Amino acid sequence: MKYYTSCFLSLFFLTAPVLQSNAQATIIAFYNCENYYDTINQVNVVDEDFLPNSDKKYNQSVFDIKSQHLSKVIYKLGKIDNADGVSLIGLAEIENKLVLNKLVNEPLLKKYHYKFIHFDSKDPRGVDVALVYNSAHFIPYQYRTYTLTDATHFNNYATRDILFVKGKLENEWVHVLVNHWPSRRGGESASAAKRIWASTICKKIMDSIKLENSNARFIVMGDFNDNPVNKSIKMLKMTNPFTQMFKNGIGSIAYNDSWNLFDQILLSSNWENAPYLEAPKFNLNNYKSIIYSNNEMIEPNGRYRGYPKRTFNGNVFRSGYSDHFPVALIFTLKTGGNTQ
Image 1 (cartoon, rainbow, N blue to C red):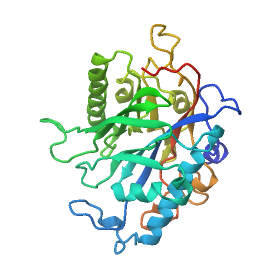
Image 2 (image 1 turned 30 degrees about the vertical axis):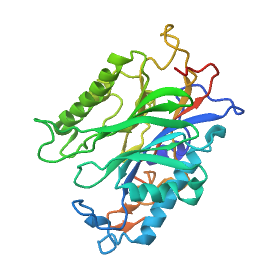
Image 3 (image 1 turned 45 degrees about the vertical axis):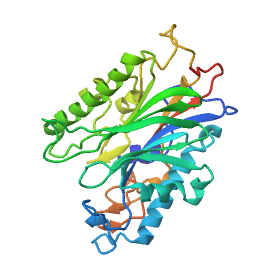
Image 4 (image 1 turned 120 degrees about the horizontal axis):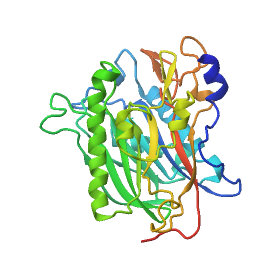
């Protein structure tokens, strides 16, 4: 496994046609930032491990390094194929608006004037999802969150909400859902029902929108804590550009010397025009999918050699990035896009 990762994971993995070098790309991405906390003790948030007086000694210097590293990844993602920065990037494990403000104002990102959409959830650890966007390429019109809690689910503890955003991406209407589904704590099988419930809620959101607009196009992104072949993902009945990567043994997160591809970006089945001749013309239908990494993001030595380089190994500061690699879809723009 270690040979495999060191040789291949620093490259881009493609599942669709390669873009022409003279075309400007539109990039949609997702990144689990792994415990992106500030240094302030928040009321009603279990953040004690990420404070200056904690065993991790999570002080301003660590916070600054963490922010710089995350901004570097987003910046480099946004330089692929002549792109004008990342157009949309969903983020997971975000504590609050303070860390998002810190991130988008990092020197590498400030010139893009990124904005963000974020709501605090009731997750006891205070780690939420958010959507960061470049307003030159995406204009949000509606946004809200959906809870996974109801009379029979998640009553003993809360989990992350699903963030929904409707907007225009390169002048095309899209509906974006950012997810961070319940973990596999307790075992994959024992916890599977929780992720199936999250998938059920996600699909209900899309079905309700399709009742009003049968041509609605969806981008469902997130850390699903399941792989492309798992039931929870297949229930969504969407195009998954990351399935073949997983079948080829490629992943975004490593555990016990094996790879999972929990981080994915799915598209509604009407995204491509060819099978849907009655659908409006659409200029975002030529894309490739990647798992992004570079040598700085990969653990070079020791037990976790070849894994994504984490910020901490236990309480030891590793000056890393995240325990996940980001994923992205990279589009070429076609003329004749739909503005309705």
